[in-house]
Length: 120
Image (cartoon, rainbow, N blue to C red; front, side):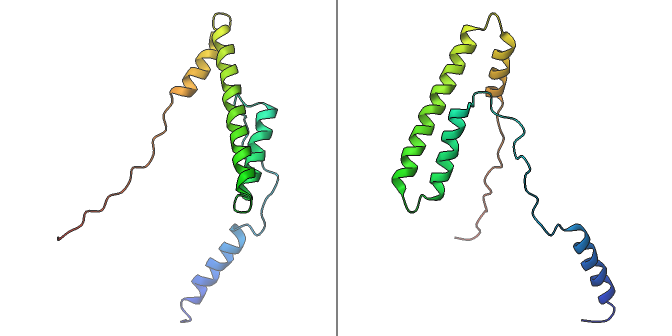
């Protein structure tokens, strides 16, 4: 290393030490809102499924059972919500349109990149 590069690297190292956090900040809430159809029972089943996924390599049956129960509970809760919205549409149209607009929004994804091969 030349002596002319050292001052620039030294200031860069000082800036990195100042700006890059040294410890992990815990206790932050990743999600500030909850899905409107999620209740405590369904949330517990989702969490149980996630825990079982971590042990998937060791016990495949536990994950499959938890996944099926979570899927069943989620579908039932969604069905109950949709029935409630349909029943109360005259009295509470705002709730219906909030749910309908949440279902009509589409997410755009990055398309696949194709490389053109030359020759052959």
